[in-house]
Length: 129
Ligand code: ZN
Image (cartoon, rainbow, N blue to C red):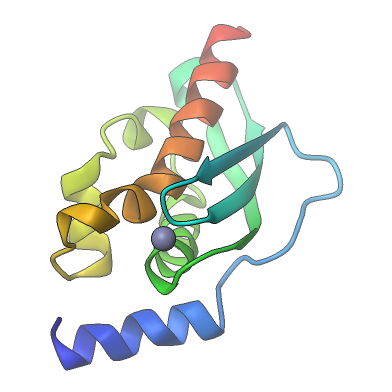
């Protein structure tokens, strides 16, 4: 792993952005990665309808390895203010670019844990309308 990226990831791991819970989230999703022991709860507030709805606020809490927590920190930064349509395409490749480093196959689930939670938010928000 590149030193520069590693430092950036460790910084997000030690001081995660958007860490906490929302008092009245539109959606609360819990996700776990049993292969590593990562667990997180994602709280999202959504305003609007359908795919044009906007993520107005997001917070997460969790326990896990540096990759899972740093990815959640960076992803929650990214999604704030975005429409659901803009977030539909988030996938493994996007997450890899987001954290800026190549992940070994054994850590893929760590990297995508927060993206998996986000997809559940999208699914439940879009299907409830
Ligand atoms: Zn992990």
